[in-house]
Amino acid sequence: MDSSEASAKGHRKRQAGPKAERKKKQSKQKDDGSANKQSQRNAKAYTFKSAVRASRQARRTLDVDSKRMHVPIVDRTPQEPPPVLIAVVGPAKVGKSTLIDSLIKNFTRQNMGDALGPITVVSGRKRRLTFVECNNDISSMIDIAKVADLVLLLIDASFGFEMEVFEFLNICQVHGFPRIMGVLTHLDVFKQAKTVRKTKKQLKHRFWTEIYQGAKLFYLSGLAHGRYPKMEVHNLGRFISVMKFRPLQWRGTHPYILGDRMEDLTDPELIRENKKCNRTVSLYGYVRGTHMKDGSSIHLAGVGDFILSSVSELPDPCPLPDAVKRRRSLNDREQKIYAPMAGVGGVVYDKDAVYVDLRSKVNADGEVDERTQMADEIVSSLDAAGNLDAKTAQRGMRLYQDDDGQQAGSIGMPKSVQVVDKDGRIRRRAIFDDDEEESDDADSDEEEGNDSDGDMEEMGAGVLDKWSETGEDDNEDEEESDEDSDEDEDEDE
Image 1 (cartoon, rainbow, N blue to C red):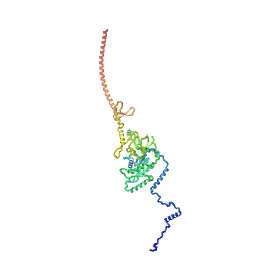
Image 2: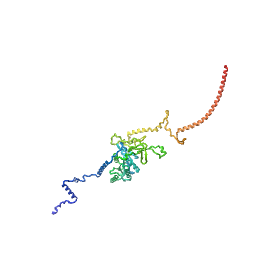
Image 3: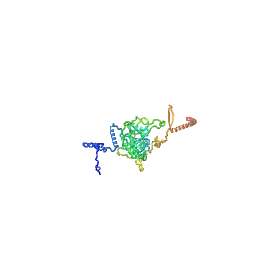
Image 4: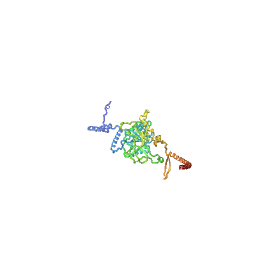
């Protein structure tokens, strides 16, 4: 080997470039003896592990700081608050009725048929929920936006956002924006998990743009036995049960009612005579906001302005559980539901009546609960006697002390006969069957009276003739007696 090949080329340090500059800076700091602690650390060692978690934490910090800057609001909610009004809004065929049915099944363990009208359930020790399904029209959206505390906005994930969603959001901005939660449905249409994740991400960010960053969005996968999965519905119901609401100032200073039952108290005779007559309607519901007084002016949505004739307090048809029993969960007797328009609920209170629903509970073995059976027997025994009309028809009505009692069914409705009196007023005379019989008897009596008068005349003539004959005989007897008396006097002389 040559000597040139055996000798190695020496290392040459870089004299220019970023690396050379960094080496010079480090050597200078070492020479000075005052190294900067920040430059000695690894920049990647002390950063956030997750950027999503970091943004969420920063957002929460900003939310807490903004809440401190708000003016304190007086909460006018009473000690026993009315049910939280939850509106289920969305386009047609998106699954609104199915979601209400699944939530009610989760809270009360009962199956709902048709979700008609407001449905009130007891969700916990201190909270009740009222579910209302909003129709797919502008008028219903405006009415629901005025009174809803929480809105479940359903979105068809297989189709995307529809115009009804944006129309409702614009309406809510005018009427005091309530709490809004998004619910994605029809996710079972997608067959690949990658497509599902991509769709969820796109719709979530678009939903955050319309509401606010971090708005809650739930995902409901396919149906199982006509309902959404039990665990997903349970998580949604749990989130609703513990949610806190910020009181809206306008609603807190104005009374309003969502009617859950309506009764028409108009006289049926007036309706028969004129179908467009003024009606007297009784509305039932929970009063929210402030107190409602008699004689105050109200506005019925879609109808007009009216004056209240009277306001009365009725027993709570869906009361909260007893506060003495301290349990976290509700038992079967406390899981109550009240939906009068849908025909569901144990008791319906009216102003002059109480309606009891006789619906027995059957366990898994097909046996009826003893308490329920006893209650059914008691109510059935009360109803077996019948109402007052039936009792009166059976037992009769005694008018006098020695009367055997007249059956109520024997007294029929009178017949109406129009009669014009002397003043020209038309009056309706009530004629009963007894009056007609009496009039017939009177006519027959008159005819018999006429016949009897002729007989009496004949009898009178005969009596007079007989009296005249007897009178002549009596006169002759008197003359004979006078002659005899004169003869007796002569003999005595």
